[in-house]
Amino acid sequence: MVPMTRFDSATTVVRVGENRYAAELDPGYLIGSALNGGYLMSVLQRAALAESDHPHAVSSSYHFLRPGSGGPAEIGTEVVKRGRTVTTVLVTLRQRGATVITGTVATAALASQAEPLYETPPVEIPPVDRCRNFDPRESRLAEDSFVSRVDVGFAPDSYAALAGERAADSPELYGYVDLSARDGGSAENPEAFLPLAVDALPPVVSLLTDWSWAPTVELTWHLRAVPEPGPLAFRAHTSLVSDGWFDENVDLWDAKGRLVAQSRQLARVGR
Amino acid sequence: MVPMTRFDSATTVVRVGENRYAAELDPGYLIGSALNGGYLMSVLQRAALAESDHPHAVSSSYHFLRPGSGGPAEIGTEVVKRGRTVTTVLVTLRQRGATVITGTVATAALASQAEPLYETPPVEIPPVDRCRNFDPRESRLAEDSFVSRVDVGFAPDSYAALAGERAADSPELYGYVDLSARDGGSAENPEAFLPLAVDALPPVVSLLTDWSWAPTVELTWHLRAVPEPGPLAFRAHTSLVSDGWFDENVDLWDAKGRLVAQSRQLARVGR
Image 1 (cartoon, each protein chain N blue to C red):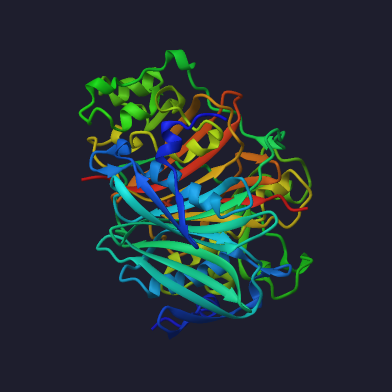
Image 2 (tube, each protein chain N blue to C red; image 1 turned 60 degrees about the vertical axis):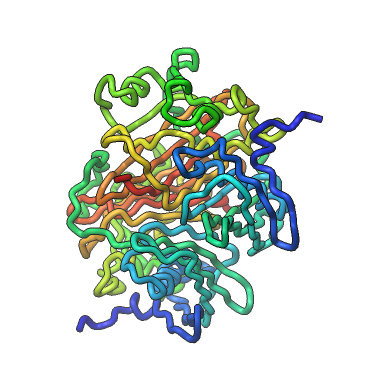
């Protein structure tokens, strides 16, 4: 049996009754005073999959209502349809009686070795050994916090733009995200890390404005293939920043160059 | 007072109790034996907005569970959070006791004349007078059906590819979608038509396989600006068709060239 990693342990949900789960949220995933949304989605995904006969969360849409914090949380589930191909589960996480995040997760089974009928050419991303991390020791955040848990390596252009060394040509970020290096990943299911991976990057809008908290209103992501273990290449970009709102699109490819996740969120430009 | 159009009338919801609405679904929006998903979203959006103090559905995610049919439907609503900036409403449509579609709608107020802080260059789409419609009289569908309600003009390349005159270079469609020409649009709120507009096109995957029913599993769309009345330019494309699943992305621009809606759905390749 593969030993449980820190990520597996931090996303554990315990069934406490019909359609009810309990979780102990890990403050190690805080960004500032709020838990990372990707971590919250990873926890909810486990509850959704526990209610389904299908192994994969193929399409998940989440609405973020209030910041989450470390400590106990209650999760409610409701299977809205149980089907042969797709089973759909509503999941809601509450803390101290207030709803933090609500999601709807369509579960199904993806074939692991499917050959695509069509795919757009993959985006060119520099090799992982040319990418650079921000040193967690230089972070203003607490020592055991998000940046020490999730390994994000930025392509040279993206790193320079984020570090303020020069202006970005466009609000795009490239690089690699990896949980296994620091937090052990998810030992048995590399796809369990994807909800965190699609929401692990600094907001692309921070390339255009001063860095600030950019609260997600809605995030939907689709699992397109079960990833190989290891680093995932990412491209993040936005199409429109207007009226205090922006979209952030994150695509992830695994080591075999397969598109494994597509995500889009609508978020507020922080003040 | 602006007279009610056929679209306004077909999407009317009547409050019948706390968190309960009734609708009479119009078989004019059938595609084959199932109601168009965009029409169902337009109906649910009206119920969601009726429960909110905010005027715009800025971010809406829907999961499609069963085909909808003409006739009576019940809608349940639940405000999950009422906020100063965003109010979020769950909406569920049932027919004959079974859930057809469930959605979560984040409502807010968009400024109508906001100047974007950043926008990607708009896609080049041929002028509307170079675009061609498929003649509803030649359609195999019933006379008063979807193609006679919604006016979709395809760019010459897209038309030729859809008509099978030549192979498509890539699974993309360009053109214009307009409700006002045939169905009167929504007289007072052009944005009320957007949920229909993002799901009014033939599946892009039909450029790659024989045309068939392509059931949507999940569709999320974001309202990015309140559109001018009139035709909306569209681009539809897919990134990956694999294992019986495909994503379909639809962007819409209004007559002023502003990106007004971004949509992505995950759907099944029909058999």
